[in-house]
Image (cartoon, rainbow, N blue to C red; front, top):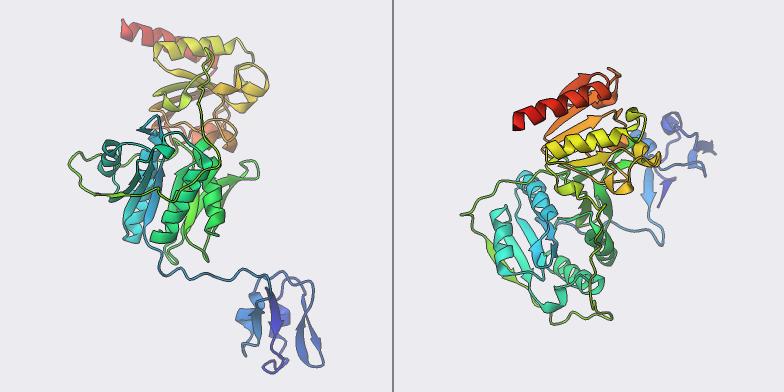
Length: 396
């Protein structure tokens, strides 16, 4: 793609020269000429009164696809050991909101589970479920998963396809995007519909979490995104909700590999922060590793789990499995207690969707207070022991 001047139309008025922020337009023999400094900002195209400045497609350029036939929002519902993963229900909540804005259907895609699980997806908001219960999908394998989802996308042409940014989603969804020749935005933390164009606004942290980037895929379909678990809220559950379950055949699906056995890692130090209802997290403000013993006591009283900021993990005060944030786990507990955490954007990305956030920090200007439901300005070594004492008294 390049910007060029139609010499026959150009009158040499010079308005385009004034509009160019890169001094990429010069006059030659009374006609405008665009040189190698052009950055394709297209400011000159809207200024030219004669419409003499045009875009020229060159060999190798990717042309805009015909996207008029693409309708509906799809959610890939991953399953493990036959049970639908919780991220699928979170995606259905987000997908329902997007589908309602687009006035479109919301569908789920389920491989390798039971019809009862497919019905559960309908109760959580899906209008249709494309369900394949072939034994090849019982254990996750990139090849058959990507083949079948690609075939379904090409056949039914959804406008939006969402999946969880889990090990499974991150493994095979990029293969699907490549096969259908469309874009993919990974690790989204928010999704919206642009009111003017109807495009999906895919929002995710960028440049180490220092900015939130909004990414669009305006020229190709489907618009594909993986979404971090525990950042979206589940929709409403309706036990009486009805929908359509569409059986899908796997007759033409092949695989060069076979999963023989899946071994789960078992460790005493493993902590499932993403399933905890209460998380007590500590940061560099604790000042020393012994501070986490105090947080563990508070978490035990509240039947919760202990989390940490990256700063605390980098100091070696607590294992990485406890890290919350952009480079750790994304969590959405009912209560998140941040102790000595300043609130850098990299940490906020991983916990700001919590129902209630309680921040304890000596610095009243700490960014964590901007997202906190309740803020306590004070020394964690004074505040937390008081909380432990009061909670123990209340439980007794």
